Image 1 (tube, rainbow, N blue to C red):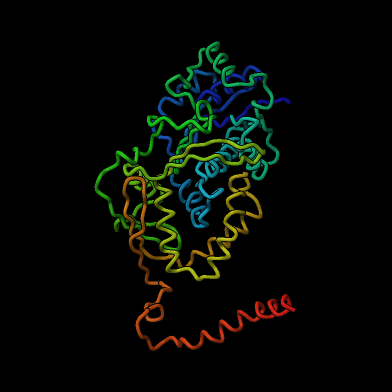
Image 2: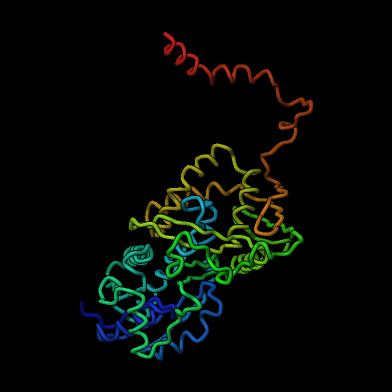
Length: 399
């Protein structure tokens, strides 16, 4: 495959640093290193200089934090997405926005190919390449982990040292991590043993719940049309709001998850995640939804959440089925306006109140005291009709 110029999704970590040099040597092509700022913080420091020193003809770092939260995280949260009961999809939802802008930059730079650092065993290769295919099917795709002879991280370290590339994996950090506005993930290395407890020093966004403040913190989050818009009455942009919740939730040790999940390619994988702000947001949204969402609408939405979550996990963000599902999910949120009050304490996030001007909760109907709006004897016929099929089935079975 002849390649003139390739746009590489570049993080500056071991894999993509080696890939940058490998692309130049293998394809004798120019490489544009692209890093999407999705909230990696200090991980972006010195990235441009490192890419250029490794051989890139250009390094582009673009701040996509607001777009990431507004157009990817918030729509996903409107659907209450959750993979296999625990995972808030922090890595999964980051890949389509990175790949989307890779495609754009390829057009701007006159590149004929794109490349990524995902391994042939993981989910990210699927997420990147399905997005490339959906948005620009004519682009060539280079997946080094499926092509080269470097079959282990140890081999990559040797390659990096041979070419004078700084190696970020050390004995002090014997695992890989991925960070963005929604979460940070840890996998590989010492974490490949699912019985081994993560070292306390590994965590970045959250304090140890046992060492969190002894005094609970109470916050209020306002929602409009299904999206959070304010914390304690202060309106914030999407990225600023999530960042604030990460800080608040993090200092109370909220959002740690240690799980073994099923990868799309078929194997199980152990991952450890920190998602403080997202964990708080999910609890707050569900509190407001409990007041404002119709029962049948909620049941239909909830029945589709596993399928919606799998689409994100498996890389189908830009697909016709996702467009249909997202439209339905957004429609369920039209009445989700209100405020949730939460108490944060030593790793827990408890809802202590919820209110809404659009509340479907009516005390006059729900009260256990005497009322004038509900006829209790109406329930007799309601129960009789609902039990009719059970009565018939029982008679037939007895006969």
